[in-house]
Length: 143
Image 1 (cartoon, helix red, strand yellow):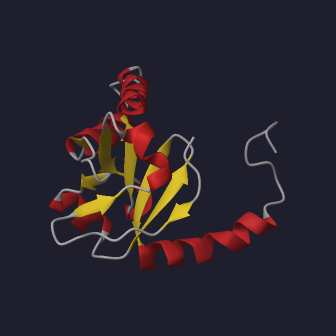
Image 2 (spheres, rainbow, N blue to C red; image 1 turned 60 degrees about the horizontal axis):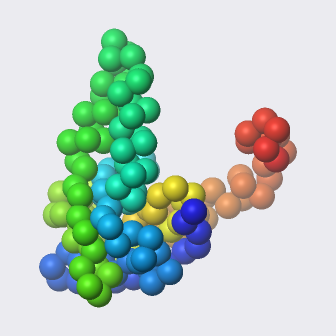
C-alpha cells in the first residue's frame, strides 16, 4: 500500500526520484499513465495488469469503456527505475500533467500519483473542506 505525500523534483531530462520508502517495492518496474484530474498514475507492473484485466472484462460495447481504455493504454509507458531510484516521465505525460520542476508524489493505496506541486496544492485546498465535512458514508459499511 502506498501512503504519504512526497516532494521530489523533476530534472531537466524528465527524470523523477521515487520516494525512498517505495523504491524496493517498485524496483521490478512501473507503468506510468494518464490519471484523472491531470495527474499521472504510477502502478507496479502486477497492479497495472490487474487494472488491464478489469478493463478487459468490461463490455466493449460500452462507449465509456472504449474511451477510457484508449486514453489509459495509449498513454501508458513502462519503465524500470535506475540504480538511483529514478523513473523517466515521457514528455507527453509531463505535458498532460503540467509537470515542470516541483512535483508532488502521493500514495493512493495501490498506486502513486504524480502531480504538479501547484496543481496538487489547489486540489488539496479545494477538497479538504469537503473531506472534513463528509457526513454520509463514502463507501457504505467502510466508514
